[in-house]
Image 1 (tube, helix red, strand yellow):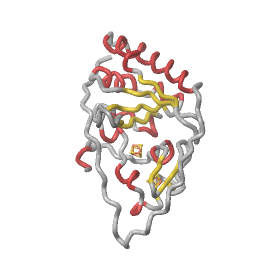
Image 2 (cartoon, helix red, strand yellow):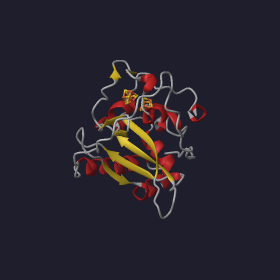
Image 3 (tube, protein in one colour):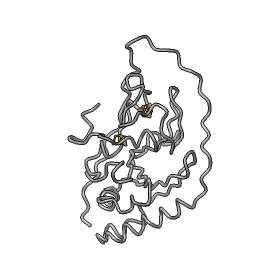
Image 4 (tube, helix red, strand yellow):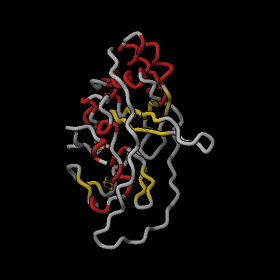
Length: 212
Ligand code: SF4
Ligand code: SF4
């Protein structure tokens, strides 16, 4: 469903999703912080034609959401935006939100970070700030909408960044546990030339620009 992608944005030299994500797919398991064993130098994938469904259908928020600022390509900015939907048996499909991962300290200085987060908060899109633990360990997470509402309403860019800075500091020093993925049974081989399907893409999240 390429039509959902933002025109003019391509992954280029980025391969952040092949490193930063935990992937628990029947065809590939890896934990966050380690480069996938199939990743090639220069952003290639050694199994591109047969890559797992998870990889085939994944695009980060920078590729999919127009209001994520142009400057936030993940490898350049250190900011990885992902779309996220919380569902439960009781309530069914939940609201769509975004997870904003600050991959490194420099991410806090990324041009467009404050504006992007403010746009989501102003549009009442749930924003979870996520801080990676050491490679192979869980993330620290906090939902930051309530804390950001005041600075966003006041158009206080420094205030937005201060909330993010404090949330990052708390997330870094949180309890990061080793990620343990349950072994999955091997998949039967596919007939030659047959893919595993395109899967589905989640809906776009509308947001508006917030002036800071
Ligand atoms: S993180 Fe986004 S821009 Fe980077 S390779 Fe993955 S989908 Fe492309
Ligand atoms: S299988 Fe290919 S696309 Fe998927 S994470 Fe590994 S290198 Fe990236």
